[in-house]
Length: 104
Length: 175
Image (cartoon, rainbow over the protein chains, first blue to last red):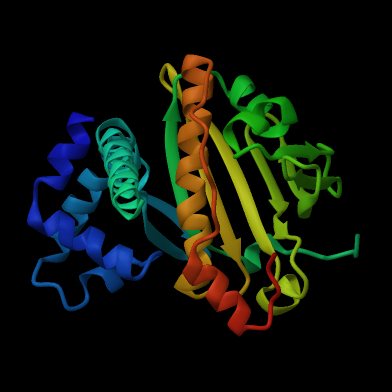
């Protein structure tokens, strides 16, 4: 999990994830297009994202395509966020009870 | 089932999800292909698969209704399973074409790397893909919990509103 946080702690890498989130399955050329980063830098960042399992690559025909893999972030959510959602639901339930009581 | 000739080379992955599971390839394969496991991590759905190329792949809802029907395209236990994965809603396959799902299982040190691919033979809108994007991460996380801890948290699976709206617009009926 350290790898995931380290990979996310960089604006350039988050920008690459944003690009894949907007358009999944891009080649290196497509990802470099319009970015203010050298091809080498993009390659390096993609390597770090792939090592953290945030990006997965597939060959399709002659192309190597990059895909965003949200599973590590999903697991972080499961671990630390779900609990708070439950709290929110309980709070809403309580609010409903209070409001309905007032009508009685 | 209608005879379909599927050439996997015509299908491009739209979704590629990978997860590491502390288990063995054989156990992951078993969990992916047996209903007593899938009921626990796949929101109560039972998988029934005839593990040979051309064999049927189906999933039933908790009340026994046929939800997914498909056909096995590639079968290499415990490494790779590809099948058509068509939601049983009228006109869906006609309008969207077949959906292909692949499970790839690779040993990775003391764990197993499981990759799920959802592929299509045409461009599919983000609205339609939102179904898979919402569902698969929860299913794969739940499968991981089941294999690593012996129990899986129950997941509620509701098709996203934007997907239902997009299907309706295309003339595909949903329950």
